[in-house]
Image 1 (cartoon, rainbow over the protein chains, first blue to last red):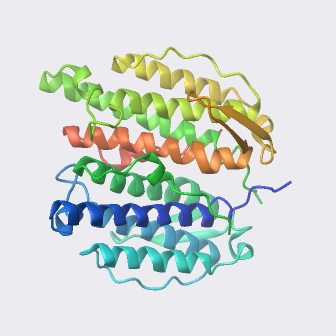
Image 2: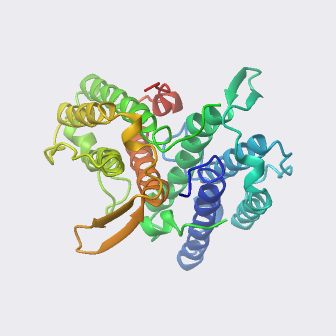
Length: 173
Length: 173
């Protein structure tokens, strides 16, 4: 019996979809080069005027992943520069996020179901979570939201990616 | 200690985001009425010519939720008509999916981590999953993908919905 655990529903999932997001950005870069488009045009594309553009969607995906794992494990995540101006910068940000998550041991995250986690948001609002409510009710849905929207923006721009590129390959950690 | 379980990471999550999806469709209907747009225009909108339109995105979200819970629980889900022509039909489909999921008891889904699940896809391809690999590696990411893309299509159309509408409210089952 390989029981489900907080680690299994977080770290390998984040790594799988961050890896596929990085590969999707490679296809975006190749598309921009082939079409002689500045990659920044793609990074600044939004689906609606009041939604984040692609670059910020990718940044948000990494933020949710790195903060969730850091908080569950009680480990300080590395400070990543808030830079999303180029595709290489975004890929570097994703790589550092994956590196941090892979460096956490299952025992650091497992058992964090009831851990009390208090988060002060940039607005000043404070919310209290358990490990479980943070991961299931906040981090994972937001992570999937931003990964999907990044992919949707690129599909909308005509980049030839498909569902398999979004899904990537399950990882064993 | 309220340990994480297969039920907790599936049923309440599906119900939360299906409920919010239904409410987002209400806002889409109100938008169409206010702008004197046929709702079918929204339902047929796609982000790319080779992506599913809104109606089919909603259908796919319900399919992933109902099939995942049915397979984990070993319960036959109700057959839902493959109809996605109107917003009321889609809302009815969502309501029936929620009703089915709410009817399952935690004990039916908990412990299904290693359950062998063989799925024959419409293409004829057969894939073997464990309960865990089906839920984490297939059903949940696809569910979130289709919910997010449905939301993204409506944002792109100008419907005034925000992230809170996507997130909805956590449910206790």
